[in-house]
Image 1: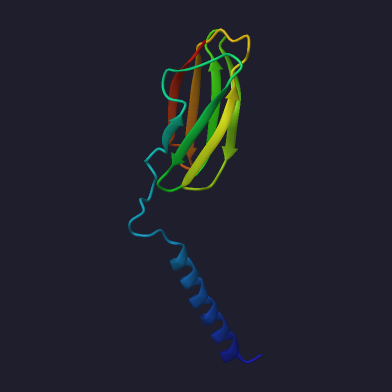
Image 2 (image 1 turned 45 degrees about the vertical axis):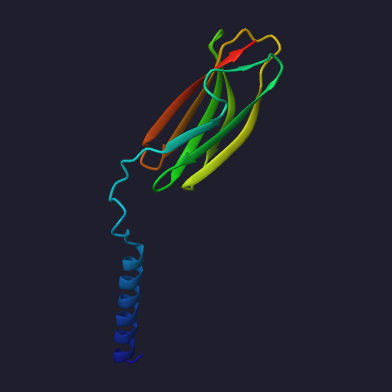
Length: 136
């Protein structure tokens, strides 16, 4: 092969590498390190809501993170026994997420219950929230 041809191939590859690296750099408005924890907005149940035994308690939660969520965990804690029940957990890669679930309040529940929610982003910034719930 001709030396000029090989040199032109290397120059072309170098240009493509430089363009690829430039395309991967963060935008000027994005922080170099994410220090902002995810936001949790519990729409339902309302704090101190009362649910009859054997009923379905609605659970609606919105999650948001400035750069992207990593995971969330939702538990319903029976405070009379200390027993947690997993409602939902998910490994996700998105900035916004909405959960719409239901939790069956056991017929033999003594209560009270507590909804525990945790959200984690890719830098392990974590937000936790608890909502007390009554049982009748």
